[in-house]
Image 1: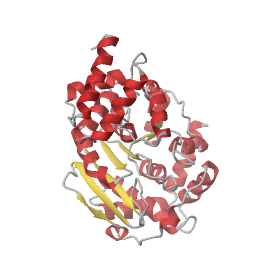
Image 2: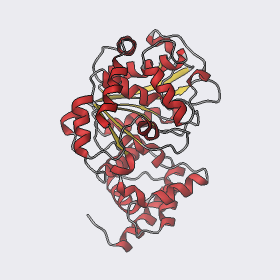
Image 3: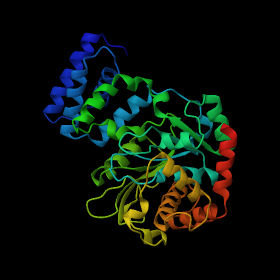
Image 4: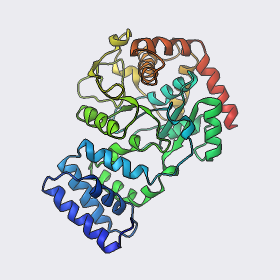
Length: 358
């Protein structure tokens, strides 16, 4: 349905007023709002006021799911349906301000080396020194790979990387508003949506979020999007710090969805028979530093990187393998991940990746 510009702008203004009155938006109105947000001719100030009103009211899990569903329809389809039902994405929302190493990227490599199709969806760094796309590029993985190459990568490597700007062209119309709000220190629903709009639509997901308050709502949203199985996690590695992923430092809070919908509890390193660690062991750096750490980590040598970092990668990988039905629980997933990493299997896989993209 295509609306006249005047009607679209009036609709967005009306929805903003309703949000200001504390009303949640039904699915039909979310579809209208999404259309207005990606329309180039709609006044950016109207978009800004709408996003602020939505954030001030507080996005419901149904609204998050509704916007994710709407923006999924604007994404370019990479044609990877043949793998989607077995595939997983492992990523975080970002925004935790932790400055940690790219743990989810390392996890995605390990899981792919284990034989699970991985649809990694990410972007360049916005709030950190090294985003997933920055590290992928440094490893030789093409961000501009054509769809045919992505499918061939899945066939040969159980892995592909969807560079977000290449698959969400409609988002360029909202980017100036997002940047303006970010400069003002204002969070919007777009700080949550990235991991929910993977263009490949994997059936499984391990999603990290920057706030404990969003663990259950995002699990509910992913459940509403009918993913087969997964978990949402938030880490509190020490007082005053937050992580958008699992770690062996402090306590992690998780909520499941789909086949794991009954999961809702606190997880620590000991849950998976791993030792706890200090938060400082998870520190990352710029692209060059993280590339060096990644290569050392994937070499499989247990003393190549801080033990806490290596074990945190294993913890997340164990959870991902469990979600993807490769193991019966997280602890056995961690054991399998350790065997795969220490055997050099992941290092050999990375060699294959570099040869593929050479």
